[in-house]
Length: 303
Image (cartoon, rainbow, N blue to C red; front, side, top):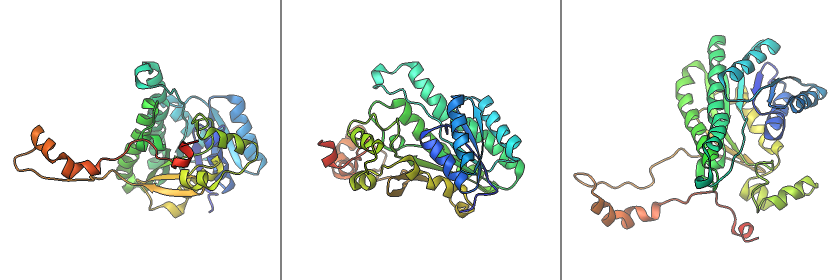
């Protein structure tokens, strides 16, 4: 996997998953723009990459605004001459149940995740189209956006919206040779250690203990490094024909999320009244109703 001629921006890459993505891209030869809201964190990430022989610069700015998006693209071009890959990873959490979530809680999360993805991708695509030789859009989603998650109206809504935008962009950008894909990772980070049944495993991993197979395979969770390879793959020429997809990655598991499909279909001459639906519901639709939320092994939930 040779990314020597590639230049990538990774938002929210000072630590955690974003740093793992940036380090893996750099390890394969790409030049990387690190982005974080903290100067010391961003500088430390750049120092780690350059100490390992990679190329990196830092741009400190909060993701969301068009101004930040333009600064990131301009920073890549000024430092390395071009832009080939945009990885939109920056994110925050403001978890609360619906009736306790404020406007500010909602707007803050949607502003970084959804609007920040939109503004960064738009600026990257403008540069890709100017360069006339394709490009890679890799947007970070979440299982919460695919299946919902308790207490995460803002986060789940934003992550679901990201996958919807990716599918749209895949259609719009195909003729320009630009791919757009989403990656929905599960990794031991500050965002997942708040999940009660995962917390002991994450704490153990911090102490050098290996994660058991039930976590790495059935739950599909591992370290941030476990989720980084798919980013470098999608950035590469090997993924030139892959677009509009949503990947699940974590631990030892790599999978594709399906596109939404109709699961049960019935027809009624003249359309459906409420009484018609009630009469037909159990026979036709009852067994096709799908669960919501992530489904985890029962032995983990019982602990």
